[in-house]
Image (tube, rainbow, N blue to C red; front, side, top):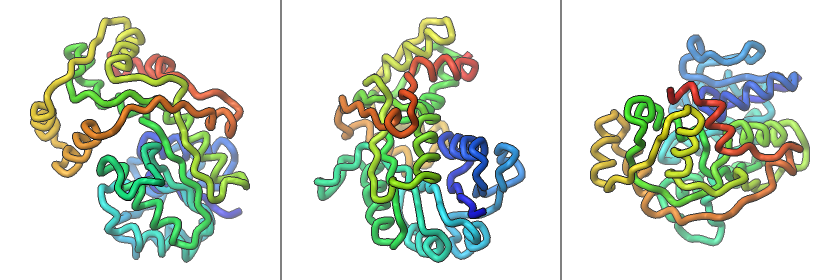
Length: 281
């Protein structure tokens, strides 16, 4: 049986992709920098590998004809070599991209969307059969507020334009179909949740889930930068996130793609908050 290689297997989406693939009976190989503590489900073959060393990926790619890719960097520096190695073994790739990518724009609105647009172009030129999952804001991003909620019940940060936040399990469910079913080649699936929400609404729903009033307090970008750097986040990531918060336009787009592909409606953010309430208490 040919294997599906999941690159980015230890993140919020990648872990769900591995888990859901295992339940289908697929042969799954998961790439992790540190295989031993990865904590991935029994049934997945966990192998070591580092995307900054494309020459060392041959063993992980051998015997894998399909690849799920999450690109964890802010530049495409190593991407051509990774894609060349992938194309030597696999014929299909499913890439987790962003719903903010605008095909008609010469340049994207912010660095993160620009990265995804650049990655998409490289994948299109790789010779691989491709599917792009253009995901809206992931609900799991809210886990970054957990400490603030636990300690103060106030989330302070820069505001961002409202979007239809999507549960990571729904993104993974679509990914599983794209990885195992035919008919997704050359498709750009735009994935959203069922409701457009701003940060204040998300924080309020988390408060409802934990049974304690919780609110969002917008702070100036300079203050947010100082706090994010103090938390130990890499400066390049901080600047990219702040640029995204400042430049990304509000989106009222809600798609039915999750239900069309999986047969189940997209989960609400409220259900996500209830499911993860223990992380915020």
